[in-house]
Image (tube, rainbow, N blue to C red; front, side, top):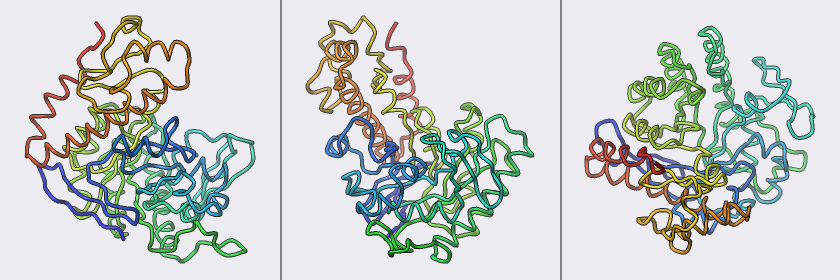
Length: 387
């Protein structure tokens, strides 16, 4: 039910196809983030119209509210979101280390205080797999330890050690050895072993030897896919590129590679050129809610007074609902008036920009022209649209 096929390469860039129980996805692909069972401000129909094919759900938030067992009794995350396409859930590890209070980490797992009600919660590798099985996503992630950007090499090495220990336990649980069942049997949303693809997560900060150690141990586990974690934590663009330079040598060519939490267009282009297939980030949706629109000519800050009487769409080359019906001046007015519609319209446009952008990347790889087209795109995308 799950497989990856590399169709063509352009240098190290890969044009591929990911098959899942809920459909196929062309790669490279960008996944919008649906934190609490919803991509904020837009409906599934609007997501499909924008060209979205795969969504990320957040295990940490869903296990705390409404609870994984509740989601399962509602049929799983797909019915909860009214989304019939592929879904990926993260393990919750990043949020434990970035959002939770009073956390305590040991080899057994992470104990933390819920940011919702202050209750004490323990997340082990086995529980992370159990929660994701109950949610029923197509792709699930191992629990890992995410060291902060300023961590020392010793601290990062310890995170690598623990993440690899957890990866083995997640693999064993995923294979069906140690996941507990609810007392009344598995709720209807639960996924049986084998129905989900487990990805391991590489850690190692910006230390090449630790990255190599992490990747080698993960590959030995023979998992369906591999993710690059622990970036976008302050290492900068050069540091990100240094980490990704080794990806093609570290991970097998017949498995998908997922760069977690990266969505800046410049970063996506750099990662694709180094062999990465999958991306997720809150950037298009969060920026849309905050009145920033992505266009091929740069970014527009829609609260700027210069757009007050501008009759043009956000991007004259865009075919999204927003660009076909609304002017820049209208959108500025809606944001100034704090109308809910403003955030929805900007989000629809940004999501369409991202699906169009990734589609253009796939076309460039197919034509063997990614490097030359990327130079043109970067000049356009990072031009100052507001002198």
